[in-house]
Length: 39
Length: 236
Length: 220
Image (cartoon, rainbow over all chains, first blue to last red; front, side):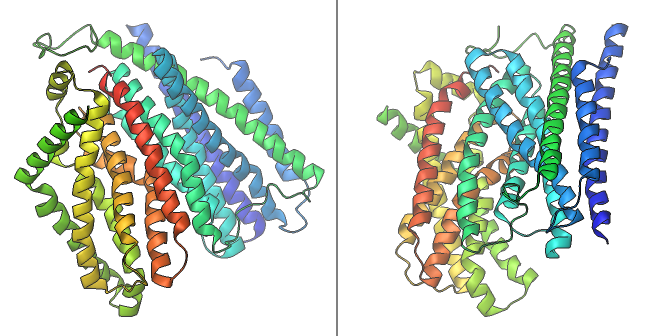
């Protein structure tokens, strides 16, 4: 694999992981806010 | 759940750092592989920062018994484990083309791995408790002990590997680093730190909502729950 | 205070001798582990001679956790409350449990050590420093184990959680003991490793005493 291939691998891993974590965090927050208004 | 200033700052700095890392010229020695450092070094820095914040939160909780500090410690640990895992992953992705192996038993890599598992244990402990106060006090003790062990683990691993002069994963303290590369590196560190702050803030808020929801659920006790064995002290 | 520690320690050891978990279960388990490793990696006698001591210390660290979390050391919250009402200092309880665990770990180390010598035939320049190494390692592990046990007391899934908590924190103990023994094997200096073990033990002792009361007084 070329150098740029490895760089892409690293960047994809990092930003994908951070993106997934951030989105899951936002969804957990949203579901709480929704159940709060239902209460 | 509007985008707050911290979120916008995180997005802005991350974009800048991302572009800088790609646009900057390749390193004279390492070539384009050097660009992995723009995600590896910030992740490693945040691994240490989040541990420190967990320590601060733990000590502050033990002194004030205010759950806000416990939630900060927990949030920082959860975000920290993500960044520590990324530090390990990027360190390995860098090491494979350079040294031919995924794991080089470099002192810093081993230390980061040990820290990762200390985090996991701490988070596993937190998940085991229902009562926020109990969770807070037990986690705070573990938080203080675990983090205070880190320097000792660092020295023991460095002594151990120091005898064998292993290849180092990175040379961030390389004095020959050119200013555009240095800018990209510092920009990345700053961006990741802002992101860390934004994520910890969100995670703490989520924890506050979870704790509040837990308390209101106890308003409907199950039958027979009112009868408990006599205890000394405890919550009343 | 010393009287409290001695009495509590005697009770714990008596309970353990009655149940026999360490001697009859954990030591045999460790010996089984020592047996299975050459089954897995191959019976290259010179290689096993060389790595035997390292494997021994790995087994001690991993399986020693089971000794620290033995059934007889689990004190239910009701019993703990009784002790507090009786005026027992939490630090004394920590010291008593740690001392009992230390003695049991020492016995465990000797048992597993005999098995290692039999199965791996390691050769050491000098065996005498082990008289210091075994207790230093056992003391550190006993203290971490006791603290971890107090942190998770009242929870149901204790053992695997404690193992996950203890082992990464015990890495300096493992490195100190294993590198010292490796030094004995090749005739190199071991002072820095003995010093490391001693420092870790002191730090853990201080941590254990300081955290005994906050842990005791945590709400149920």
